[in-house]
Length: 223
Image (tube, rainbow, N blue to C red; front, top):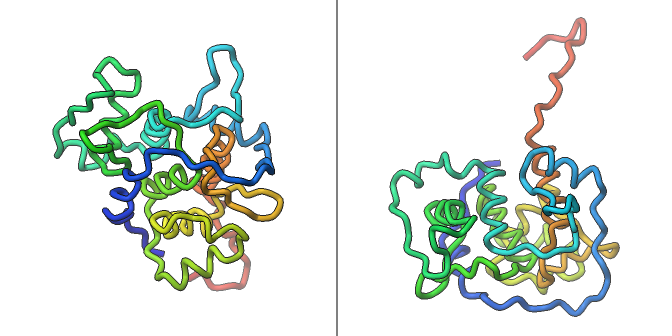
């Protein structure tokens, strides 16, 4: 299915949600297995902390998300990078460890700043925000609204997904990149953890692996 980058309405709406809303559910999402985590570590998409621990329950910040997406999608190679000048970001000086990555996600419109060009690099993202921004980098499927609703209706908490994130989250659901709780809830308003992102990235990496060629069956004509 043809993929198009998410519309400007998605990224513009993302910048209107600077405060994380806490979901009311107390159920923990499934802990990602060591295999998922090791896969993203091996791919150098997320690294361990200096003490060698991964800390899957730690929350993802906007700066960390920017760096992850640049690595996962090689955003520095996209055409927009050479076409746009660096943006002055008051709260992200050029000495910031993620400065270059933040410049890249801004130039490619994968992420947006807030009013006054503030980026809030330390702000944590919700699962809705993290998944929608991931889909923006991956390529949001331009499903009609009826299809979006059909995809999401299998999840009991689908009505809690913000309107601006529904098409993007339908993309990651349809690609089976998303982890849910035991009831199938997406929990879009909960903060996104490193474990959540490890799951998404591991599924994405699995999708990128070369599929085995179709075996040749004697007597069957090859198309």
